[in-house]
Length: 88
Image (cartoon, rainbow, N blue to C red; front, side):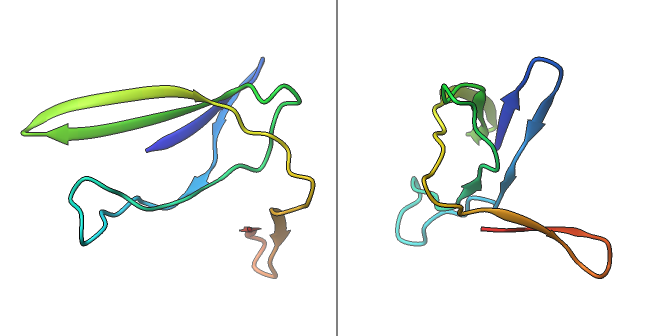
């Protein structure tokens, strides 16, 4: 699973966790994606999902509308180890 933002001069993805299956259901998955930026018109993001059923590989793509929150819910800090960390 990957979420990609297409911009005029580049593309980039965002942070996400693997989507494990719910133990009670074989057809449901749980996870999250952290979007650090949006366009004013909510365009640019595409969700790409690759999966396999009975040894056949498939891919699904869909545009996403990611709007700006009224509150800051994501920030980036640099640790004393010079590594950037995302806090959501």
